[in-house]
Length: 389
Image 1: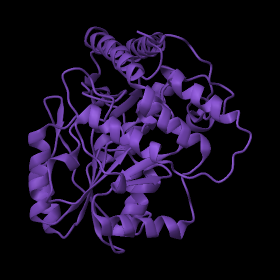
Image 2: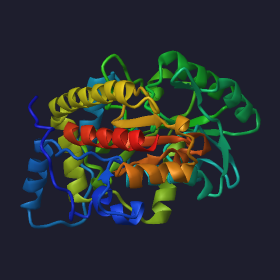
Image 3: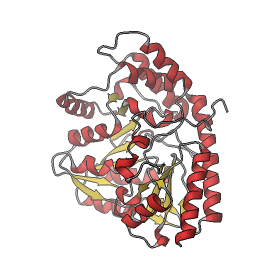
């Protein structure tokens, strides 16, 4: 590897949400922070070098989006996925969550039904409810340790008049990388009922060996697909706040732009633009090394859980650096489960219930950290479980 991912970097005192908000979120500062979905690895050196070079220019005024910014993303998607994106289809946006809010507000009327598939990234819920739309739940099905779409129920939701679906692909928190047949079945129903799909694909680059991410927009010309993608998760530059929507339909682009214009917000700043472009242009080797490292950490956890923690099971992820543990056999309610991991194990994770009611009894762990940290967290959990159960 060209990068030492084992290197420990002290993030305390850097205004890191993951580290410096532990007291506020967990009630104690000494828990191991395995929660917020950013990584504890240094961004690619090329990104840091580009930022330093930009900072040396002493003017940080109003900033435009250069053509090279768009081209860096177009080239990346072509190389990695064979996905041909046009410059005109790309909308620069101030983060994925604001993009979801803007797209929902632009493309639906108040009280419109919007489908969400829990357990799922919790801002999906608020993006619907905070824009005054009606949340329609189409829960994923869990069978034999694997999640899948409930297509029959999805069609029932469509029959109720829902015209918009928020899709998480790859899926956070359950780690699924959806197969072609699964996505095609979803598209068939969407086409039949004229449903627009907003596909959140910001974890698309974080895929384990043997899996392949399929951009949903590449699979159809007959369903309106809006795709959220960004280098933020991929290269650990989430604090930069710059993301994109790929919107092939000209009228939909206009509608979403009108919402952003009404908010008087912009994603343009000299550093977010610099980091975005440098990551896509020069970060590929770093990413390939990262995924090998994460795959090793994942395998270690899977082996450890199988041999040392019979009370829990790991839902084997196909992508992301997030692990989804089934802890229902512990027999604890949601709050007791959360407090057990905080107070007894000293490990701070995301409780599953925040991803929807069907996430109750589960916990989400972030392994985007040096493997020594991952091993220590798992050993603390195993020790706590031996004492308590």
